[in-house]
Image: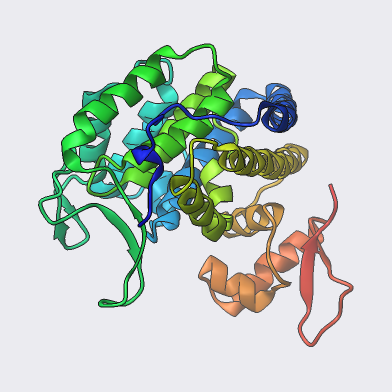
Length: 368
């Protein structure tokens, strides 16, 4: 019979190998400081653009980890509306998306406010405004009651399910969550990045809600990472990296939840994942700065909306070759219009014909 970590007599007194963790924590802190230093060197407008992109990515990828696909444009529109940013025409609000956006912005924008049961329950209600998760009615804003049986993480076809994890019984939740919230608010001596790794594991292990526990755990992670930087500015997405390593994420959680109180392996995985997200953010930042430099250089020239759209996509890393037919498809215009747009940019010395060859002529941006 499986013994889960919360059934250990010393729960929740987590331990870890300090010598192993300290070295990787120092490396992760260095990457974090380097990224923040680069961000400080750019202007306010780029700060806001980076924040918009990072929060949008965080929300989209956190949903994807749970198998939920959100509309990218709607998420970005909702985030921009709340940040007061002008990104052109805003899309109509989707209340499910709006609720997730509100949760993340509260977690990161009000990172120094104390956590409480009411705050967590408020996040939960905002995530499920209709009281449904898909087609299933759930308890919103309340701890689960296990009326439909124990809370389990399972996979496989009906009748041959594999139980990966079974959460503590519902009658323990009030006590378990009170202890978690007190630790979250009061243990200020611990490095916040280390604390974020523990909070993430601890929360998903308790699994206090019927649904949404993973997304709330990642919001709590973002909240503690904001505390680690003493800033509500977001320049990277931890969830984006977890999404890339989704299988490893669930594997390490399962192993840790079925092990003893030594969580070294989990902490090291978390730090590695966070460090990689810092690396990716540096690459994204390079694209943001490059894009800004391009538009500053050519500020005196006139571009139509189609040209701006395609150029921005190229500056952000256009996949494959840009041809006139791809231009027409992306810009939603005729082939003739695409040809005129391209000819204009060739005349302006913005585009050049690619030397890669092929049956169709392709184009690339001239280096700034």
